[in-house]
Amino acid sequence: MSGTAVSNANSRTRRVADLAAGEEFHSGTYEVTREGIRQFAAEFDPQAFHLMDDPKSFFGEQVASGWHTAAITMRLFVEALPLAGGRVGAGVDGLKWPAPVRPGDTLQVKATVKDVKASRSKPGTYILTVLVETSNQSGQLVQTMTPTVVVREPGEKPS
Image (cartoon, rainbow, N blue to C red; front, top):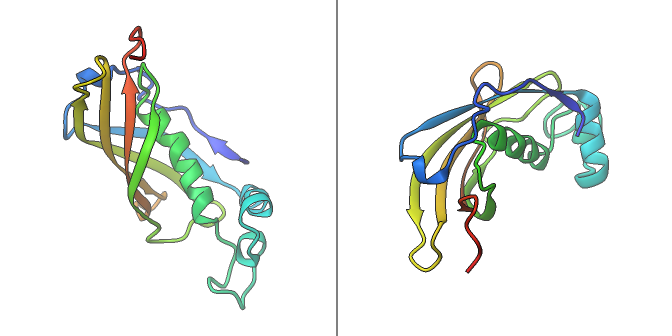
């Protein structure tokens, strides 16, 4: 994925057990490049409006694939909220792309903890639900999603 990432201010690794609903985390930024959009599209979503400027296309210009935006968002989400036990995706609700991402856009993620539940059957394992909002440099939302992830605290063995 070609683009420019800026390091994250929230680099402190967190324990999921210490998170609380309502906490917010912010990522560093990621600048989306024309070439990065083209490379991603060529491999994963080869529609003309992702590959080049086309005034006759749906958007009238080159824009990033929503899946490219989702991949950038995942990177920024992991950087915004580094978890000591890592995370395994269990599903995503409400994935939406309210506005296109264009070459030169700089994206940033705000992750808001919605819920943290300890597993009753697997000690040291938690279910974490987070609202993840991706915005461009103008503060315009370009993606929203609410992933649910499974997190195991470090040192816990699978049961």
